[in-house]
Length: 486
Image (cartoon, rainbow, N blue to C red; front, side, top):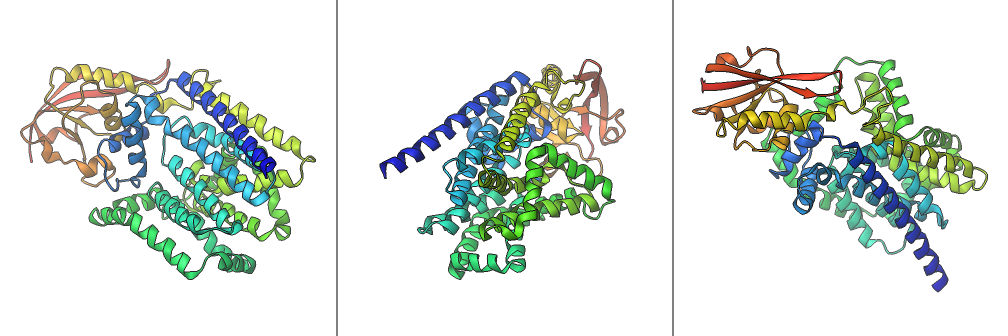
């Protein structure tokens, strides 16, 4: 008994040390990268300054998360982003625990956690903050709780944990519904899975999970209701299901991107597991459905419209467990594959942040450059008009200026030329806020025709430039707006 406890303690300790080393290396490299906040990150920060139960394009949890970390740490870029490598590291730990439940091999947790924390998609995601971060975090805990329900005897706590993590995952990103769809498909297609789940989930258990889920997301649903379900509308519009699709070109592009997201060797091993589907234990068949259902659905979407590389990221949590189980099953015959996965992962973990300073002929981080300098230049103009309302005709510019301006404007308005709601800033501001006020317009448009007729007097002040690279600058025009005409 003491020996078993010692072995478990040593396994967990080595895993924690490994994850801590990766976290510290990763944080140092991204600090070296020294990138400004991207406009999505800056927008999430503005949300965290005005907490609510929902926002135009996303559920609210990310704003709550940022509010916690910036309250503790401050508003510097590293404080806005630091929750990303922290949560990814914790996710790796829970993925390791999940694999241990499936395998009982003493090395299972280390193998699974090390694969997850070093897949290229996580190395990239760890440098920035996005809704994928809490989504994957809660999904990893939900999968662990699910595995505990299947494999352990004392299950009551895990039903509650599963309910909580599904709810918080939904409040992070709606993609949490993919695993739910996967389970429904699994019990329809595979009778053994239906029997397995019936033995572990009674009707009362399911009722309890649904009750907790609906209770926790109710306020978000109500926020959507009073805002005409704007978040759901945006999500559907972003999916662009009825749009003009790219067909096989988009499908192939998305599929090839997955070799970068999950890693080339890891993805090959994952697809090879399908050939032995019939021989797998029923528990691993559940992982197959949890992995390939979201991946297949997003591939269909890529074919009929479009899909970004990260849209199937939730697939790779159960996928990591599957790949790890395959490596453990055939160890030491295929241990070289594991070492290859880790070697490629370490290479990407170093090269991705380094490419921000030494871009090797490419520059994948253009959208993160020059915003702090632009904010400084606008602040200098704004110093002459300290009571002016900040006005922009671009969501990206609004988000970045609200973060990077030294003397923050007390009021701001997103100029909405066509009257339709396109983003959060158009949702929460109105042109009428300019009544009896002067405005400073920072425009990304080449002229002022889309707003000049709405004011009695429009005065051009100067051109400003955002330095993207040595060869490229983005030009912005600054206008003084006076006498808004309703």
